[in-house]
Image (cartoon, rainbow, N blue to C red):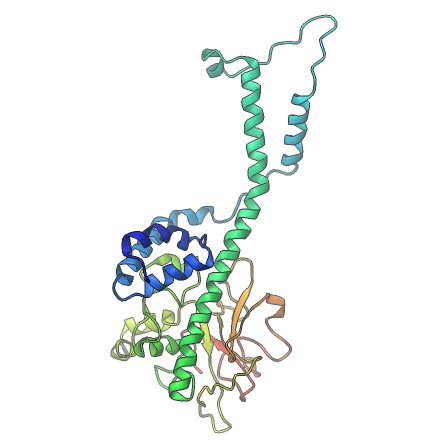
Length: 333
């Protein structure tokens, strides 16, 4: 049972930063897809994305000064060691900040505060990387869940049409990203629920993203708005460009349930060599059999089997049925 909007709003911040467990995340995603409360919740989520956008400049942690942890621990050990009484004259009184002197704080209180601050700083230096890794892993899991949801929509479409969404062989609508408007028009994908977005990408942080329907896309052909629509309609994921027969005709994307044949993946960047969706460099790939796999950049391309180029080295449809090519939203077969 889906909670009401007030209850679910409390979970949106955790959902945005990938801090929820799998059960909580699934509950939020069900609410976002609910036709009754989903539209309002998605507006709330967009508002949160805009509100936290200034944090982007602090996205990368500042490296600690070399040797900071070691110096801090040596300082703490030195201050905790038993004090020896001076043989001739008393040791000079530690110099305290004027503000502490005015408040009447003794030298021991000032020293305690210094030790506490140094310990807290050392803890932050040690814990921050672990926290960053946890957030990164949560975002990666959410990206995988998005691909699994897209896989469900694609499999349902293939069962009804005996093929996956396939763009026309030519013309303005012959684009890789056409899969998304196709699923939206068949009510297999919610246009603005963020399923086609990867957490924390530029497109996701912009807020207000919505996949157009096929009808909207066709109506925009020939206008400046059409170019923007085809550039982003596939979201942050790339889709198969299929393959052409010897006569140059684009063939339907048949579901042969091949475990080695990708149909979707993180969309390529401007180099068409890798994706920049994840700063840590991982890539998520969805195969015909419904399996989602994480791949590191050095395992993305194998010999002439390039993820984003065909056997001729072009960003275009494959040269045969085994030549899999993942194109960005605007790429044409």
